[in-house]
Image 1 (tube, rainbow over the protein chains, first blue to last red):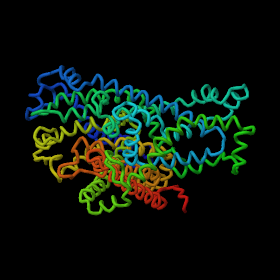
Image 2 (cartoon, helix red, strand yellow; image 1 turned 30 degrees about the vertical axis):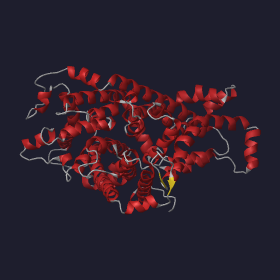
Image 3 (cartoon, rainbow over the protein chains, first blue to last red; image 1 turned 135 degrees about the vertical axis):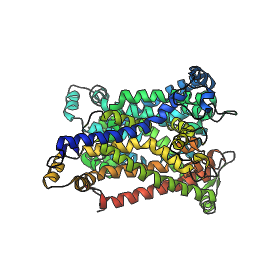
Image 4 (cartoon, each protein chain N blue to C red; image 1 turned 30 degrees about the horizontal axis):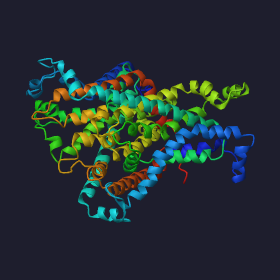
Amino acid sequence: MAAARKSKASPFGQKQTKALMDLLVYIVLSVAGVIFILPFAWMVANSFKDIRGIYQYPPTFIPEVWQFSNYTEAWTMTHFDLGFLNSAFVAAAVVLGQLFTASLAGYSFARLRYPGRDKIFLLYISLMMVPFTVLLIPLYVQMRWFGWISTLQAVIVPFLFTPWGTFMMRQFMVTIPRELEDAARIDGCGFFRTYWLIILPLTKPALATLAIFTFVNTWNSFQWPLIVLGKPKVKTLPLLLASFQNQSGMRTPWHLIMAAATFVVIPVLIAFIVGQKYYVRGIVTSGIKGGG
Amino acid sequence: MTAGAANRISSEKPKRGGIAEIKRAFTGLRRGETIAGYLFLAPNLIGFVVFMLFPILFAFYIMLTDWSLAKEPQFIGLKNFETMVNDRIFWKSLTNSFYYTFIAVPTGIFIAFWLALALNRKMRGIIFFRTVYFLPQITLTVAAATVWRWIYQPEIGLINHLLEMIGIEGPKWIHNTQWAMPAVIIMSNWQGIGFAMLILLAGLQGIPEEYYEAASIDGASGWQRMRFVTLPMLTPALFFVVVTSLIGAFQAFDQFYVLTQGGPAQATTPLTLYIFQNAFSFFKMGYGAALAAVLFVIILIITVIQWQLASRWVIGFDNDDN
């Protein structure tokens, strides 16, 4: 929009008009930025208050008394150490599993020729549209049959397979030039070695995208763990955070809850800031370039 | 999206054949490739069949039963769907789902559109703002809803304090039947706008500069450039955002569960939460599955309508039917 305004004559001249517009846009962007940031800032600021500061009216933004012990207290009260381990283990297992199954299947769909391939692929992309809500009940019954209720398998194993990720891998691998592979095949590489040595290294950007998406989704996942993880021993962080705020007594200890929320949010924020490039690209490619 | 993908698959399709063809694929020269193909697919395919295809088919059976998990399932035909007709809370939750979706999605996209437009200017610091707007999107909904639950507290909450500073007495938000749903919608949009904004921004950046230059040479005003270049060229991105946001909104669960628990007086119980309560609080698996089927059909119908309408307003939309 901006760069194209050329022929317009204006009372100030072009430069001033653009500078004025820029200033206006900055103001709008900053106001919006404050609105987006405020809940985070409020969360962090209040995680350092004491209970008096929390219930003080009118509230102050900066704590009058800084109480750093909130973090250790929240950590022990909610058994976050175990929750952290559970969450980290689940996220790592699901990410690695998905990278493996999705890239292998993606390679199979994109490159190998065999009967039935396209029919299976079509089934994949048509079932991609089924909402997870439909799966909740049958999958829960299945978990009971397997004896997996209140075990971490229940939140790992069903999610090692991703139609969406497979689809993305296939779309990416189709664009890799065939010549590279043919050369490897002529040199006597088998299919697996070709996949491992040639295709995978070239697929790194797509793998990174899938890894970050899956990590964020798994780390944040709530509904399914809520259903299958009943015992405290296996609970992941979002579950602990949700139950923490319900077990309060007379006065809700918001300062501790905010400290707990800060804990849970930080790993994802770090993951996002580190991998922002891949995450943004993932959204853009799966969104606009995904199918066509 | 899907239709485009389906078209692309056929590019290297092997010749069609019957059993003889399949037999040859496993015994002839290409044998190695067929075996490798299925081997590579195997881990994924097994998981897909066990944890997706089977549950979907199984759901069709469950919805026709009365099943508390304690006893064997009783086949009752379509009775669950008959029950729904007279279930007041079902209708309430259905209304809530529509209320939530058709307010949250348009307002969210409207705001995301203007933010994307502002971010599309060539200025310094754009990446910073983009990151800031996107942060809530990757924050887990449980944590976000927790923080907002407190922000919405009538007496000690931040929002009512800020409102009071400008002389407005704030409502009771999540404790009031009228205001609870708007409260959830505000929080959801705060969290979800980043996604729509990013897609729309990518769409804006994909519009060739020459189009604007050509429009300027023809003497188009800023408004006309917006009306005749930006908006039409952005329709594919808008279409995608509308479709995915509608699907996502009907499936929203976490924010309702944490922020309001569906209350007060079911004012914020959407269909997803009612399904959850039936299946996992009242242990009515059959009824829950039937409700889930209704949700699926609603999503399906709305998506199909979107695809049908798309050829009327989305530029370059190749609808297979037309």
